[in-house]
Length: 151
Image (tube, rainbow, N blue to C red; front, side, top):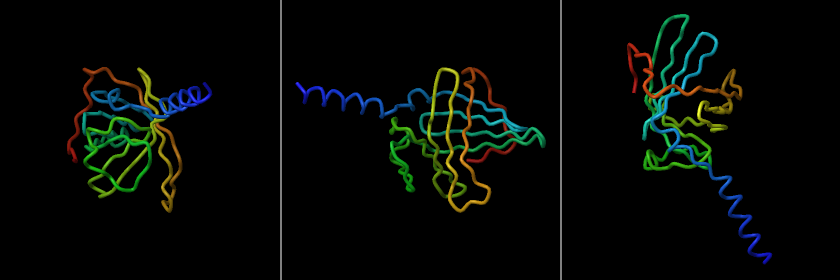
């Protein structure tokens, strides 16, 4: 009986630790307004489109980045997991412009908000840990177009 309880407990712990976000994120749009800037995130099946709007200069720029979720952080981006890896607490992105990986931790996700944690990168001047909370946009809400879209 004791062994059955231990196995049951381990299954519950494993279930609680394995978070699945991708099916919830796909085809969603999010917005964060903060200090003269607006950030938009649009999750597609295999790419995240991030649009930044600087309100002071009225400039907009958009980036499309392949992504997948993972249970652990890694410094190597595995392109074979894009659009397929749907569980994990870390959001891993490929930044083509920087030829490098970006990552953040999905802290919370609900029907109306998404909170991401960005850890400071070592040896970066002015780097600091920070959280960004986004509000969900309606599916039919357009994201403002950009003059020069980067991919």
